[in-house]
Image 1: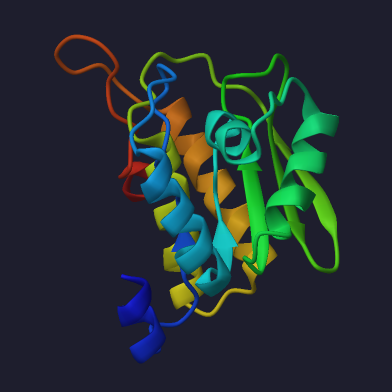
Image 2: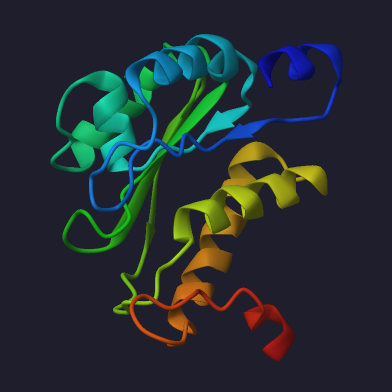
Length: 175
């Protein structure tokens, strides 16, 4: 994939390092993680690790928002143009994500939505950021808009079958 990105201008690349499941189980082996960091991070306009992925990449725990901020800066040093460390449901209080680029660090807060129906939340966020970038939004604006979209998709999520249900990706059509 890194070779293809080097040959073709696809616009801003958002890298969602799907490396660690919500359960904490590793989804990539250490060698694949090293290739991901070495070859894809430098090509990324933004990487969007969750807390478990950021902790794995940095080899340390991330227990609170100040640690998220330090992690975002340390991940930025690995080569991407910007980092969004996703707090998700791992920390108490508001849902906090930390955005960091070479110019600023911003805490993005939204109300925590009490729902078990969170399947695909991280992928939805990175895809929504990518879509907004494709429409020409500046990076931080794309991140803010995607977080708002995700918050509403969580608020209107619904149960289907057993276990965690999906987000309501079509909530914008109900307006």
